[in-house]
Length: 208
Image 1 (cartoon, rainbow, N blue to C red):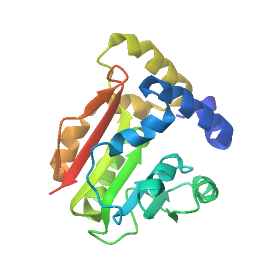
Image 2: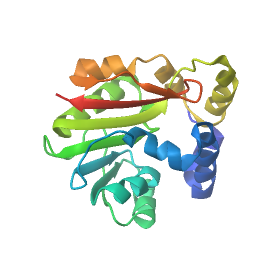
Image 3: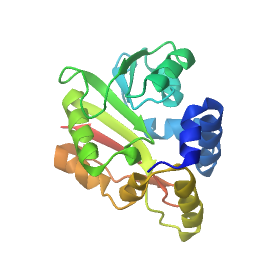
């Protein structure tokens, strides 16, 4: 069940943006947060890129600075409309992440940021399978999302954030071994990189 503050944050763009900026302070600010999943990637500029669950285009804005061919996908028509206004350089598709209207082996890079924690376990597995399907062989899936803190100092802040703005699926993600799920789908991955006392995980997974 969503909290009132969560509903309000999606209704009012200024509130959502403010929350995002405050949350990103733990990793050095929103600009750095948006770029963490792309660090160290050797992907040509002409690559075809998908921003999965793009929301109102916060990460899409960073992607179009590096790649000219970016598509944003989101199930929310409100988010898609906002993204079109915020980042008109990208193309957009309104669709569910677990059933993407794309051909097999289409994208060189699929990126998603702070979205997987909103999914039920069955949805999450379907989305990972869909990402694998639409990626080209050798393509890369990058993601940033919550992780169970390794530093206990970060637990109170994360718990408070969850209670105010997230659903029970965010708590479920903390118990989920995302690297193992990705390996089961067929991805080859390195060890996730953890930030903010372990409360944020960044994963780069390659389609074999």
